[in-house]
Length: 148
Image (cartoon, rainbow, N blue to C red):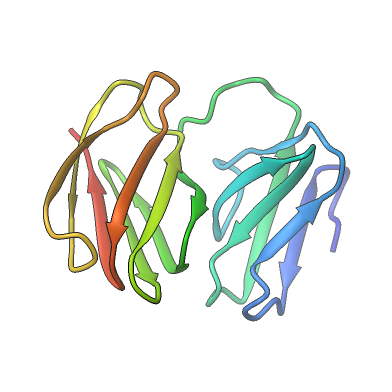
């Protein structure tokens, strides 16, 4: 349901948790979204990923060039079933067949992170100059990405 030119309320989406916006330069304003895991852009189309168990999601799109300041998932090889942002951390529940990868965005550039949880054990990782971070060799379980 569209609630204005750039605000959408999605209900009853069940396990169909990806919304596609064709041929757009708009991006989610994650500070105004609710129950959004993240997004990616492929061939000019915007794909927004929602938390599967949520009963409702709010997507607020913006044409702003302001960089993302909230962590989000750009891509995952597997299924993210829960996603929680807190001050200093992100918690993800993850499922896969064998091992998978999660690409995070919206992180502070060139920053060290600690990755813990049953999905990864303990690892140290760093974001790149664009605030992106790839975590590989993830198994089914929980993952906590934390920073100071």
